Every structure is written in structure tokens, then in C-alpha cells.
Length: 194
Image 1 (cartoon, rainbow, N blue to C red):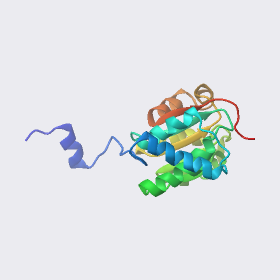
Image 2 (image 1 turned 180 degrees about the vertical axis):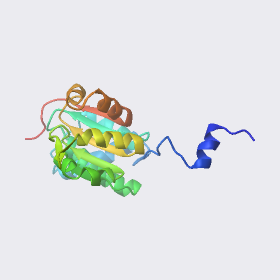
Image 3 (image 1 turned 60 degrees about the vertical axis):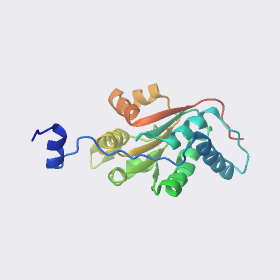
Image 4 (image 1 turned 90 degrees about the vertical axis):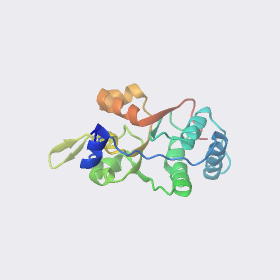
């Protein structure tokens, strides 16, 4: 019998490649757009307009390819609404998945508890401060991204920072990992809040 690397790994129970979270809330982009649009209309009392970047989110909802979602860009474009309210509802209803939702400050306060979750949404990344507990300094977001990459966690992130601003704040290593495990969607334009 030939011992291939796959057989050796299986025999010892070691899994160097984490199982990623694959989701699909719809079979077609049109169906996903309709799901997303219905959510947007519900939460905005029908005072919204479809934005081009929403189509990229709908594509992610059809097949995330095991990657999380990184919504970044200008404020007031619907990132928090989509990521923090609509996507958790869609993933729960269509995929039986629970999204654990946090803001950046909660990430600092409860990092170890957050890291135990498997599908994690964090709002407003870049606004948190350095976490210091008992004299130990921790870069919570960098730790979370590292954990997600190693253990196949699904991260959904919203931020007003650009990729270059994220890199300045967290370093090249963290942003490189973040890009590897998420699909970035850039939200451009003026605020839609009126």
C-alpha cells in the first residue's frame, strides 16, 4: 500500500487545511439581489436605492467560496445595515448558521470569547484601541484574523478604512491574511443617510 500524504494525514487525524464555512442563500445572483433588496427596504422603510456595490454582496451570498466578507469604504453607504442585520438574518434562515455580531470595542473587551465563535461579524474595525489587560498588550483584530485563517472561521467585517489604511493600522501581515480569507467589497460615494 502506498502511503500518500493524504492517507498519512487522515490516519493521524491532523488537518492542516481548515474546513471553511461555505454558504449560499440563493441559487442565482438575481435571487440573492432580491433577498438583499427586501432586507434593505425593510430596514430603511422603503427609503433606499440600489447601489452598485450591493451586487457584489449578492454575488457573495450566492457562493462565498469559503471566504468571509470585507465591506470597506465611505460611511453611510449601508455596510453596517447589510453586514450586521441583513446577512445574519439570511444566513440563519437559508443556511441555519448563526452570526455572532460585535462592534470593534466589544472585540477588545471579549476577544477570547469572540475567538470561540465560528461565524463572526465585527463592525467599525479601525475604531478600537489597543487592548491592555493585566499589562498584556493585544492587537485584537490581528489576533482574530490570524485565528480565522488558522481555524477556517468566517469573518464578516465592516470598516470605513481603506485597505491601505487598514495596513497602516494593523500591518501588512494582517491585511494580507485578511485579503486571503475574505472577499473585499468597496463602498464608494456620498453618504445615503438623509
